Length: 241
Image: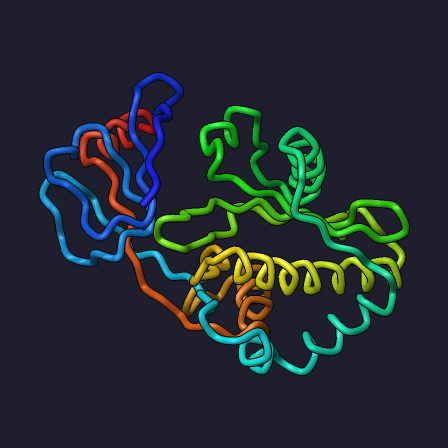
């Protein structure tokens, strides 16, 4: 479990708690619980299901990669042949610039320094390089005590490129980076690699594509729960009204 302070609605100090076994009812005024393994109601909280795909890092790398689909196995081999390199020492400022450029092409919300700084030492950024250019970046929140790492953000140059061959290289780089990240976290003693969310039974084409990408690495579909303070939910409702 990891915990840090942040602000709701940019004003109200709150706590964000990841991967807790069960929310505390005594913290229901100021605590958000993200991906709790508890699934039952807890007084004072609004609960919503959260699905994600996880990979068991206690297996051998050969066993893990045996569950990759054929396309992913091929693209990882091809990326290595293309000379794409992967790195685990990414810089927060560089990631924010890279991600925000990506987000603008997709109509996603931008992130600022404070959005990542709150994770402090629990944040790790990885990236892939092709022909001296960073083409893919991943940001992870890491819970070393629980042995769990969770993908927070992924960004690529994909939507900024029109050349089909360049898009293909970037797509392969992304698969290679996930594979390298899995190996890195396993070697570093982590036991769970969390791909960062899954949308079961969705009819949204974009989410279906994301699901299929995550499915291509195998793994297990897991149901967890997000808990929000009821007062915060009510305040958000009245703010929108």
